[in-house]
Length: 126
View 1 (cartoon, rainbow, N blue to C red):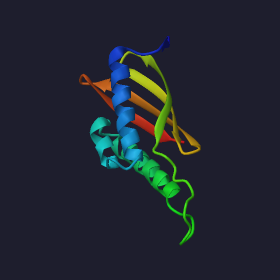
View 2: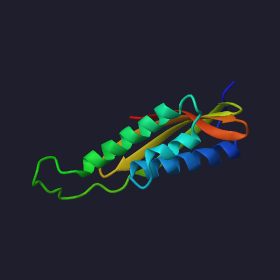
View 3: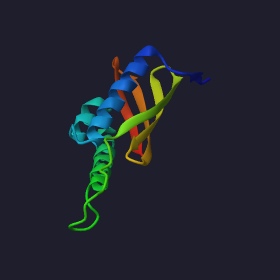
View 4: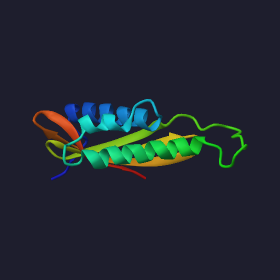
């Protein structure tokens, strides 16, 4: 049975994790900061996804050709919407809509409760 919504603890963990992901994407934190918020077995993949997303944002901000100037630099990555559900106690799945400039992205993630701490098991940037 899937319960719509999520517990208060799960919501708080999601808010913190998404905020740190946005800081990574905007270049304010290194992607390695996601490691301590991830399950050890999945940490390398979570960090790799954060790093790939940060590189994509940085590429969008660079001129396409030498000497070319961007008329309008894309703004920082921001959260448009967050949807989450807790399919079972101790696991929360999240879909996040992000925007930077005129580009919209999606981020999907899963956090699980282990030893009374929420940790990421999956992170995907689309």
